[in-house]
Length: 400
Image 1 (tube, one colour):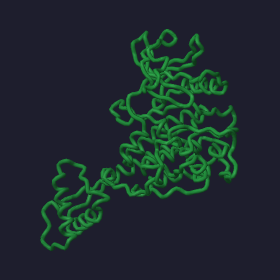
Image 2 (cartoon, rainbow, N blue to C red):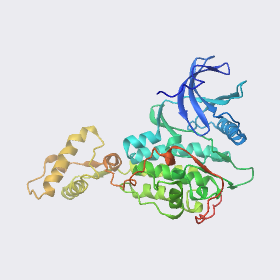
Image 3 (cartoon, rainbow, N blue to C red):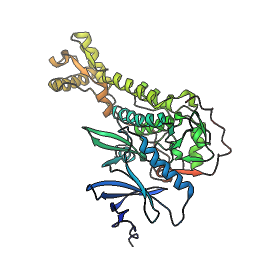
Image 4 (cartoon, helix red, strand yellow):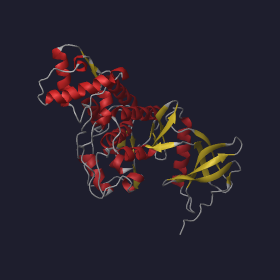
């Protein structure tokens, strides 16, 4: 039996938007693909889910989300076009329609995002968050489901940060906020957010660290069948070290995941700078080995020792054949063949660790049996009526 047809599909909303189909649903609203009749363009419209009753808190949050997005101009934040209320009382706001894929879908398809690509995605998330933090707004629900990847300006992974429905505005002159309710998604919540503590931009930084860890490892740092199990791990446990990533990348991610807010990067801008410096270092780390018996032998031994984890990759197509010959030469000489090396083995060999990262195998621990990234812990934000008990409080937040 097919599900009942949505009553808005096929109608004209507020006399201006022709509703075409549902493209997303959340705890607070439904997102539709629509056509803006006056200019004949497709848009995305979020309509507040009422369920037959008006929730004053939900209405306030809906208005806050629209006003929040309206303040932003960063290209990595979804753009607001319009907002309003129909004569029948339906609240809605209109956004640009995005054609691409969620980061959640990309991680599920790829299992593990290559290091350079993950760093570039994280940097764009930081740019969106920095503008929000400059406006004294905390997102509070950064997760792969709220990160959208589109192709724009020749860039295949142009990031759009979505869903500010749980955003929190910090009062003017106030650096920290104290929540009276716990809001967010357990898999991605900072320790202080999970326990109803005082929040600062460093809470969003922690969530970025969780997202980065998941991109690089193919799984979140903590998992569990129940929200409380995940929350306890965020507060009390240290994530398993990231494997098969450069040390400097692991340090950046683990710093973002520090239990104490004061030990994390203190702004999204700082986290972006660290990622950019790391990316620059990786891209500049191409080694050029000079001619000569010692240099050639060392290059070949290095190439042989890296088989399976750090493949030898040539940067220049003109030396691709030489690189393949040298790789074979490494195998031959590693097996003890004393015959003279081929001419290619005596020539310069360019080894690019950055390119080789894409070929590194994932050997991390798999999630516990029965756990799915598609379950309710990952797919939806969770709300509790007040601070949780029975869990030690995390360290106090440092200055914003």
